Image (tube, rainbow, N blue to C red):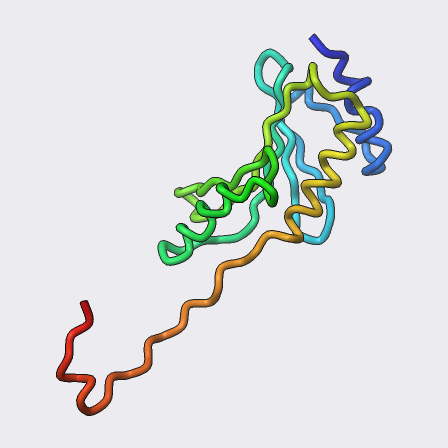
Amino acid sequence: MVDLQQRFKALSEWIGSPIDLSKGAIRLQLGEFGPWWLELDPGASMLTIHHTVARFSEADAKHWLALNTDLRLLGGAWLGLHLPSSTVRLMLHLDLDRFDATDLVNVMGNLLELRADLPMPLPETEAPAATGAQQNFMSV
């Protein structure tokens, strides 16, 4: 098992606030896009970092899920759709045995940058109204 205080020391210094995951998930207010959540699995070996990116509609759900195929953009992170709240979540799992304190700071910095770079779906546009002869044809 990893020494959690040591693992989170540099991240705590970077954000200017202590990190204590011993009692459950914590919320960090980082960057311009709102809160980030850190959670440990029951064995305290895996860290989950997640952030709500935006609300989604059925029309743009495909856009968000398609971004998961862009490995250059997301690296090891991924986007998921939280159906009960209709929100898009940016998530990352980390095996804490493979990351030291400095790595965690770098990961959070990279996630903040990734969040800023996420392409938003294009706004839905209404099709122009059919006129004259166009009304006589059906699109297939």
